[in-house]
Image 1 (cartoon, helix red, strand yellow):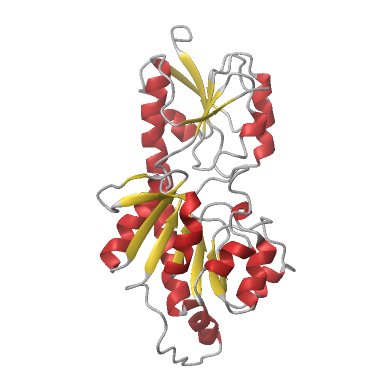
Image 2: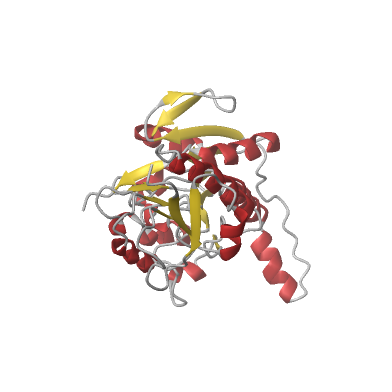
Length: 313
């Protein structure tokens, strides 16, 4: 416990109001644009989709014990984490929206929707017969956490075969018979038509998708990235797509934002959305639901449930 009340900062005033009834918590509004409103804040919830450099202000809080993100990704926050401060990610908040977009990107790419949109601008009745369906495809989900599970739940009723991959092999669940280890990718890639990336960006996963990875994918297969752009070697992807070997549907890129002159914009077989996987109307209600539980945990002296790092400066 941190005194009679745990002081926490929330990025929106209406979030402060919505969570005012959490026992043991005193909430203040702080968007991190300026200095903290008080120096006894023990837990910070940073603003969603804000400049990561604002996190440098965490160093101004002598009583800080925890940072609770409302994003699934957390690599942007680790460099700013003071010594001993626990960092928790927003596991579960973005499952619905990101899985929805992942499947939507796959359908759009498979069924030629980008081509139809361009044809509509010219009033052209474009006949796209024989496009590959999503049904009957073999899908590989690399990163079988909560969002990976949410993707699988949407694919299976669409008559898609699903194979799951995580950092280490483990037993299956209600959706898949087993979860393969990431070391099995060389053998798995040639057997799958659609590859979904939804794993964290770490030193181990940086440029996991390189020229060799792409070469192992079957011809005309599809790579869907709703994770982080740095997991993919962009130059290798441009070459593989331009050569017609694979296609890509990307919600994230490296670099990001993608400069207007970048070749990826104009590469055949590439569909790009501007990192909007979690940014839907489904976000706020799920964020508040998670925060309600986590703030109660924190006020009771318990660790946050989705701790992903501890500051070690």
